[in-house]
Image (cartoon, rainbow, N blue to C red; front, side, top):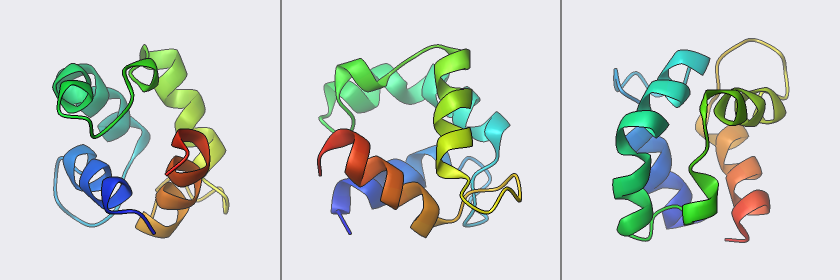
Length: 83
């Protein structure tokens, strides 16, 4: 698993509980996305609007429990961003 996936996951985990909710992903990408892209953590094209962030969440939520573990998130991030 990529260090970039861990860095991005940790940046999106606003309450630092080790999982991501849909709301966290949307809020964190809105607030931190441009900065994370400027730092090279996420590609600029990976910073989308709320609908795109929600779709990313749905794609990553493999078991449908409405929270993302690091494993679920990193599998999608590594594939989508080519890490």
